[in-house]
Length: 287
Image (cartoon, rainbow, N blue to C red; front, side):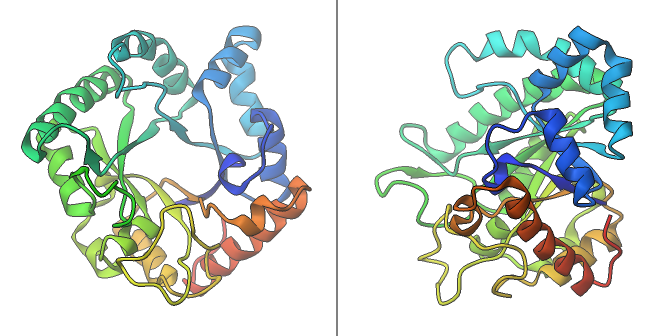
């Protein structure tokens, strides 16, 4: 596995791919999470070889790219029709991991109806990506405070998301494993013992605030890795290593502390210090 920088996730706005790659190289990251649409535009303007060289010059691997399909919308199939062209660029770049979030509630659909609705839509996305060798990861949302009080509950934990991936049945559907969502859903690092590397498409790491319970965690109130020690991130990383996970590990703290920093380098330095400490506590070499 390798550290991957997502500038937007740590409060750095306005950084395109090239500036993100430069920042990642400066702070020693092994890869960069990026927007596949921007990458496709650069490939169209400069050629795919130049795009590959851009990553190589910055000693960075392609990390996770956000799925460019608004699958909740009625006109989502328009995005699906555009997906193969983007997937072709991703394949040629060697960027074989994409992810999206799965919301833990519905306003109208009962659980089993909603499960089937997601299975069909996610299944079509996975089938579209399959010929390109691209895996798609679905993220569950753990905090119990997230769904509106009058909403109908849906999948909000790892076991439920794995069940959905199995039902999709394409072989390239897995999970985006977020340490915060695992913790706030009531799970722990021991749950990773039941996972195999091919079930994990991408990983997000972050810590949790002190003094809260499973009923009071908020989705957008997190901490930097190792900041509080509430989440056993050393054990989390060790289990990823033991299962042979070889993909990106990205910090996504939704941190007011980092968002308040105006200097991108200062923000990146703070996050990197915490990420390196997490790697060190796990007894792993930073990469």
